[in-house]
Length: 502
Image 1 (cartoon, rainbow, N blue to C red):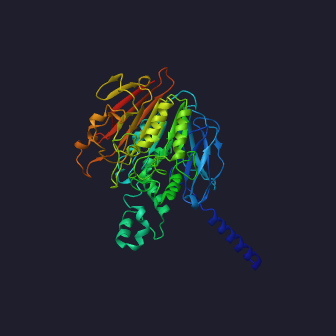
Image 2: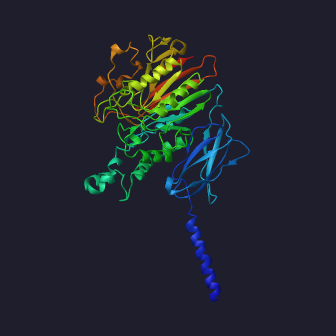
Image 3: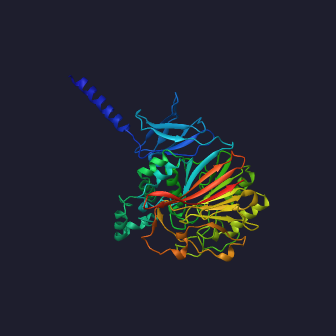
């Protein structure tokens, strides 16, 4: 080989090697996450191991033709995540999909089922709960959830714990405190000396997305909102230092939810069948809970509150679903931060009353609130103007008619999905006939404070609510069932159900 040919060969090899380095083979960091199906499209969040382009191939199962989405870009700036939108999706249909990388390699196939047709009466069901603390995730609750074939899964906050099992809020101090640094290294939170707050948030999500969680999220559309611990700190509020980092990490781990504000709180609205759903952000705008209650103290902030009230007033739906990370009742409030006040709506009664008065003034009915946080299942009725009337009742069931309830609000809470028992506050019997207070329909025996022995050994591994909604039948109805894990059989057991008919 002469010198000219040798030089040309070397140049070609260098170019080839440089090209190989630029186009590193990519793969999924974890399974995709399916979002909420709206307006005949569905967002799917993809997370990979390095930068590059990805797109999705999808088709109706047993269908003859498939579709390819546009390419989405993965960059280090967004932790190699991107939202890919599947277009022209049909309602009530089973789809399969897979990710294609820029080298034309494919991931495995995944499946999901779409929502009932929008703005038309229909049937659907969902699971709701909260509190996925990694330390207590030994039991595969996600497999149990899949057995129920829910239309979607509602995760109502604390999808990870930023301030437990390695407190990322102390990250900036660890370099000057060898003991603290070693503790955080041992917990798995610190790996490199240049770990940032944002990276720590990302690490927390990576740790909680175990293979069981991933399998569910890749097949069942996921609704998510944050609460104090995945927002960043116990009982945190608008003053939280790292709220922007928390929001960025949240959006890197859950699909696009068409937020009302891009640079503000993560609240949003969607419609399933002919039911309107409002997902509230109870952290970004909230005043500190120890502030004196009054016009200046807020849970939602002026803009979100007005959006919520106007949305309720404009809704023609028989049922209006509201997701709030903290309970509307006054018996589930947390005081573990050592500050005055409660972490739920009971410390924000002035704003809660504004909502109640608006509902009464505009004769809005069929409002159903679902929440997590309080660490036990419960059902309450609020905003009552007269005594509570039920149609039928047994030890484990109760049935109401919305036509008898006026503008009353039903309040359901269910958690933890993976965590410890919390006791809440004692029921005050004399308040049960007072319309200013929540009327308690159900609370399990183990959740009554005087019945619980305080111990770290007492753990409820899984609690959730299963909601069935039917607006097709002549009498539209809602059925809410509470489930608790039986540790002996490792099955979820129904402990109570509330039926509401229109």
